[in-house]
Amino acid sequence: MNIKEVVNALERFAPLPLQEGFDNAGLQVGLTEEQEVSGALLCLDVTEQVVDEAIAKGCNLIVSHHPLIFHALKRINGGNDVQRAVVKAIKHDVTVVSMHTNMDNALGGVNYKIAEKMSLQNARFFGQEKMADGVIGGSGVIGELPQPMAAADFIQLLKQQFGVACVQANQLLQRPVSRVAICGGAGAFMLGDAIAQGADAFVTGEMHYHEYFGHEQEIQIAVIGHYQSEQFTSEIFREIIESQCPGVRCVMAETVTNPICYL
Image 1 (cartoon, rainbow, N blue to C red):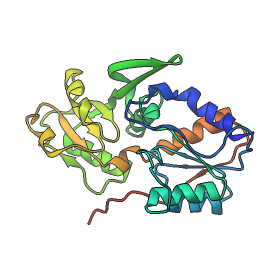
Image 2: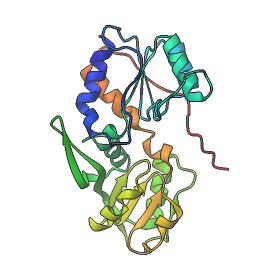
Image 3: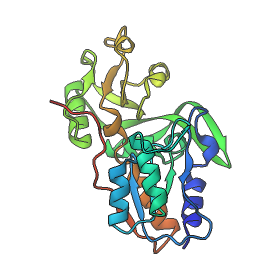
């Protein structure tokens, strides 16, 4: 099976038109038409170390969530980590494909995976929905916990399920948490929609200081870290490839790319 067939399977699940206007999802580096895939390394971020891992494990395709090339490159001279990763991928004939906000917004995408890790029931989009190539999309997912729980227990659930050393939260809610709204990554823009949908809690990857104000006892804000919120995206890639591209070897990247340390 060639690389193009794998890319097509991913894009059928999360069409590129679902991505936000600021994004650069899709093919980043390499050729896809005739090249047979020797293995797909699945990851959140592409760094030089991730490319090294792909080479060492015999994978000529890297599928990432975050784009390797997010901002335009005016030169490629190895001057930073992005350029070095691009140079190494080209030199070793490794194709890099990124499925970013199109995978965030897809039915069954990143936010659905987060909901799955929390065992939410009746997971569904909230806020404005969109459609691309027959696939329904939306920026956030909302659902219900199997049983209501105290806010402190809910925070502990997040720490356990996502391996979070520290959850940034506002004042603990004094009523049970049942309905939970999710927007992985930088999802603060969905907080108002979560409140409008009657969510007891809103889980995202990062928020600014002033965005926490004014919501005491209105909604439980729980910020678990950008990396932590999206770390299971590779599982979606694997599920798509294994079901749609039988025989393609999938390798979950072992390189930890989270640049934030909790001390």
